[in-house]
Each structure stands twice: as C-alpha cells, then as structure tokens.
Amino acid sequence: MPTVTWDHIHLRSPDPESTAAWLQDILGGEIIRGPGRIDVKLGGANVFIAPVAPGDRVNAPPATPYQGLDHFGLTVKDIDSVAAEIKAKGVEFTRAPTTIRPGVRICFIRGPQGISVELLERDPKYA
Image 1 (cartoon, helix red, strand yellow):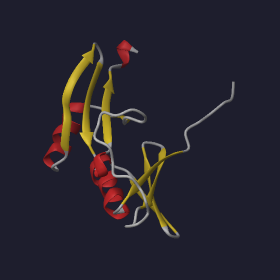
Image 2 (tube, one colour):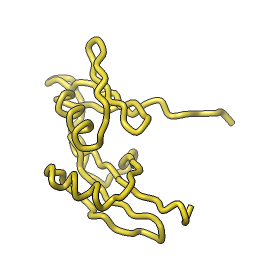
Image 3 (tube, one colour):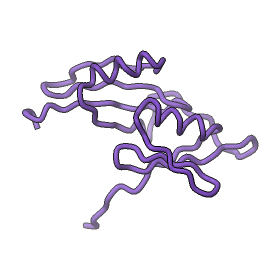
Image 4 (cartoon, one colour):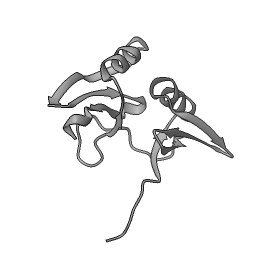
C-alpha cells in the first residue's frame, strides 16, 4: 500500500479574500499570500483558494447533503465555548453542538459558498 499524507484542500471562491478572512476570523487559520494566490494554513493543513470569475464555467455550490465530498472536519477543544464564540460572530449552524456517542460531540457550520464544516471534540478517555 502507498504511504500518503495530507497536502491540501482546494476551494474555489468568487471572493478568495473574504473566504480566507472567514477561515482566519472564524476558525483561526493563518493567511499566506503568494504571487497571484491566497492560501490558508488551517489546523496543519493547507487550504488553497482559487478565484472564480464570471464566465469561468464553474458550477454553483450544491445544496447539502449531496454525493461526493460532503464536508471537512476539524477537531476543537471545548466545543461548547467554540460554538458560542463563533455563533456570536454570526456563523450559521446547520447542526447545533450535540453528543453523537459517548465522548464525541459535534456541530456543523456553513462556511463561504455553502461549504459544510464539522467541528468535533473527542474525549480521550473514549479513544
């Protein structure tokens, strides 16, 4: 079997600056600017944000849930305080914080262009 590691997540946005700012302001990402592009370092992963211009023939974002890539998940500590903090910033929750099984609490938020983001907290004693 091949050995793989994560390299990046690639997003397309009609407004890469605001998408990057959202990832920074809401999720604590670090904006990294390069020639002709904007990326965000988020939780150890690279998020590349490609611009979408009128006439680029890029489809509109689908309504969730849908087949294919459904969401990406990020681990947080103290999910309830994280949720309260980002809710105060006006973030839309598509699923409020809830315990899905002993030791695992999750919530889902809607990001720019309808991106679905799961936040989860795992209690180490259940790992």
